[in-house]
Image 1 (cartoon, rainbow, N blue to C red):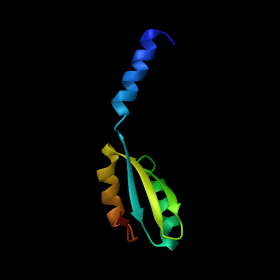
Image 2: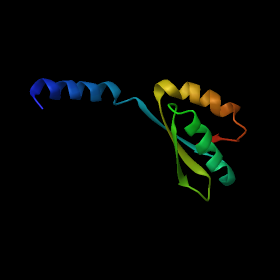
Image 3: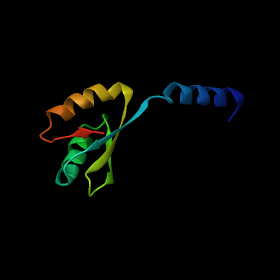
Image 4: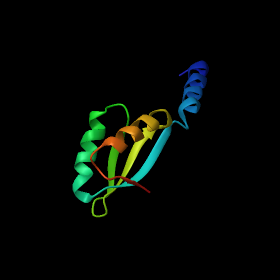
Length: 84
């Protein structure tokens, strides 16, 4: 990688360094799988990771640009989601 490519790579990293957003949430244990499937079906809006299956705790990885749309969709899902 030459100097110009390296500088461009760093600029790209800086451009997106604050783009990721991690949302902590809690759902009923029995609803974790459904939440994962529904968010996965939305494709580009986010990814759900279970952090504590017994307590129903999950992390939703999204971006600041996608969060508003994802939050709106989550509110319309037939699941009770508590953001923690």
